[in-house]
Amino acid sequence: MFKLLRTFRVVYETKNFSKAANQLFISQPAVSSQIKQLEQELEVTLFIRSGRQDIQTTKQADILYIRLLNLSDDWSETLQALNKKERAQENCIIAASNTFAVHYLPELMKRAIQAFPTVSFSLEMGNSEEVLEKIEKHQAHFGFIEKPLISETVIRKEIMRDELVLAGDLSQELWLVREENSGVYHYTERFFLENNLNPEKLLIKNNEMIIKCLELGIGQSILSKKGLPKTLSFKQLGDEYWRPFYSVKRTHIKSRVLNEFGEFVHTYYEKGNSNEFD
Image 1 (cartoon, rainbow, N blue to C red):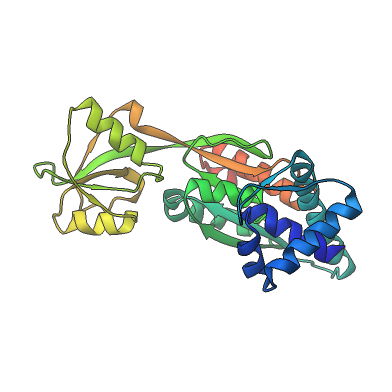
Image 2: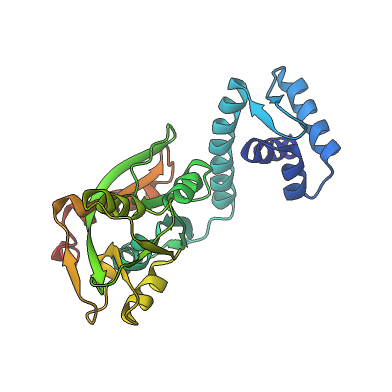
């Protein structure tokens, strides 16, 4: 049954039998056979073919997937309990979007490592959509994003605001811009509309690369004030260019220690990173 459920999870997440077969290192007919066997045992239809390879999930598949994620968590906790040592390590995976990961997460982790010595932390970085997807798929316990994304299986809470500024050589017509799915893209486009601009653009998919170009006198850009070196001049843009950051986590976390960490995060930002933690 475990093998069938594992195959189901990969098929559900890829929505494609061929991709699932590649991930599982088995043939496509084997994937189809295992899904058919699982459907027969459960007496439900889990997938509807919408093409040669692509599929659609049924309501029963949606229910099974959510239950399976929780079952996987329970199984991991069971294995941990069976191998429990005097100071058992609790694993905690944290995913964060670019600006938060580089400029805010290290400050939080300095406190967290001291407060939770029995927790083994792993840090990952991606855009807001990727972070949310990791939480949804139980590939991360906690996340930090810069877009107001929502999900039925994720709890989102605003924790802080980050000031965006206009930096670089403001006399230049060239603009250094992030890609469309970047958190700062919306604010850059808003600035263009507000100021009736249609400038020459250079697309750069990394904040650090943008900053390096600005330091070399190449163009101007809207980005987080937090990440600017002191040598770069900037112009403040007003209250509407303070963007919110959100914490996201699974709706159900059974670990007492990880729930305590979640409360720690919220308290940390409610106190405004104050000396309460010193």
